[in-house]
Image 1 (cartoon, rainbow, N blue to C red):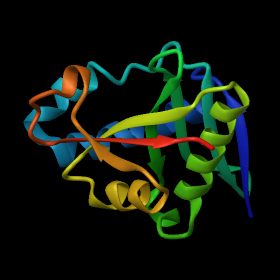
Image 2 (tube, one colour):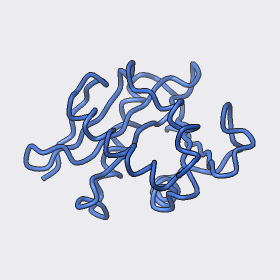
Image 3 (tube, one colour):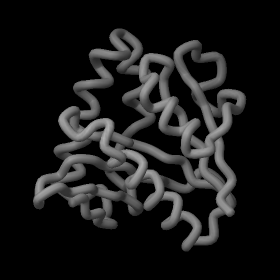
Image 4 (spheres, helix red, strand yellow):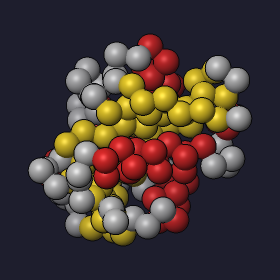
Length: 150
């Protein structure tokens, strides 16, 4: 059974999972990893979800305010052994619910073309492609998406 915990980026389990995420992204993104890493600092994230299976941390995600109306989904990761079991969907749904509770109208996110499983998750979850925003404008590997929260 998966349990979800709302926490902050001070959570050691979240930090452990992010280390694994960064290792995975370093391989996928190659030389581009340094560019992306500068936008993925976790020192002040106040809205973090950690998923546990049998008290072991298996997945995470977070959001930060993007604008007064929107949050940006960040640091989504699922341990390889847990993939394909709906854990990422559960984390994303909980992040969206938390954002709604805080009166945000929607979510934006950036992912990479070298992460097709993430793109599929977001599309399945109702996210639509948008023009690349902010630091991702003109970045060939970046895919930006948005979803309105009902």
